Picture 1 (cartoon, one colour):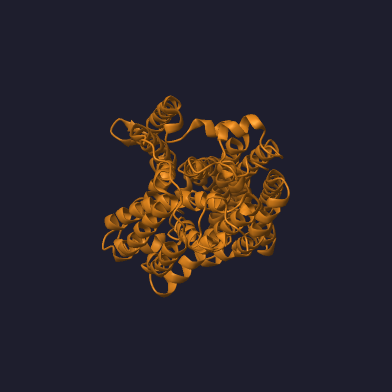
Picture 2: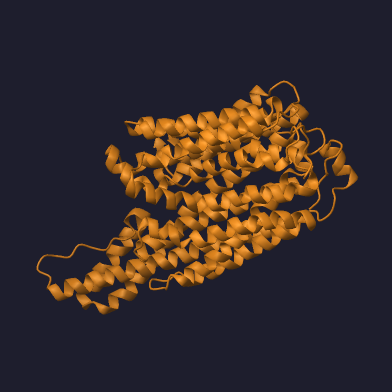
Length: 547
């Protein structure tokens, strides 16, 4: 039986006994980042609410989750991962109940924000607990199991959400968390050990600066497209909010430097090359995952005409492959330098998405999309768990929570930036590809209709995603056969223009994945040198940073 890391008392149990509650909690968190998207039209009808209002059901969760990760990671260092994880599990489960019982969209949004708090409390503790309980030679395998949960949960959300909404109602996308949460709570109380803590003053000014700075940045990037990157209210604009977030975050970093080891985010962690590069790579892979699914899902539904559930099923084989590959990748990173596994994963992701971009066409066979998505699943499985291991190896009980919090914060912020960039790129490309596709389609129309047809598409595309499928209104008295020609040309223009814009947008994610691969290749492939070992201050019996 695998022995726990030195100084950890599991009362005779294997370290593997801590994984079920950690993975169940992490699974709920990851599922709830995507499960609501499939229910947006249903929620609009149920609450008679606008798309922007219902969008906050997801935004509120993602905002509180991303903003609090640094703080909750440090709470785990101070009070121990077990009590903070249990508290988060209780908050998340009760908030899920409140979501299902919500009688108005305002109550639902508030409950989702609280759910995000619960998720933020749990997430850093899952990585910190694995880092501190498992011996170094088994840590990669444990991270592999943890990473497989993320792969499966990513696609489980849309599929499960579609099934529940179509069968028993939208409330059950939240109620389903309750039995899982209860089981996870019982396992947490019986299997998670109480680990040593490191008492020191809590950095309250750092908390305030962190929450405010990240809050402004995440809000501005996450919601910028909703305000057309302009005015929010009165003199407050999206660029001003993002700029304020950058300034406050800069003040936060200066304060952290002043605080030293008592900081909310000890900056000495980033002297460790693998930690710094793993954080950059983590942001890159989440950027890319967000950047892939947004245009790809719209393409499947708007161009290929798939239902939301069928669109989700296109990515299911890749997700299942990711769940299978991740544990093997984790074990492999215990035997060879983890950087090579991560680099292989990023390379596989970049090639797969590059191939996918070439296949996005109006009349493509679905199997041509499933094949590169299988490659996407393999790449995700190779990256996620070894990368988490590289980020946390070498952290001791005083910094494991802070390191996990920083890693997860950077991942979430990477996703927020990815979402903002991809929406902006897709919108700008549509303004070019839609008129071009309309110009091609117009050649089949009578000459009198060609100019107005193209002009109509040009005006619609300039208004953004919501109007990109426009055209122009036919004047009264148009012969039926000509009207049918115009409708067919419009369909052809929309499908061709959107497919081209989606493919070009995917090229942005390929470039980001290449940067992630560069980060992986730049990591250390052997044990951390003595100088770095002194910086990260590992405790006796803990490995100092292989990979």
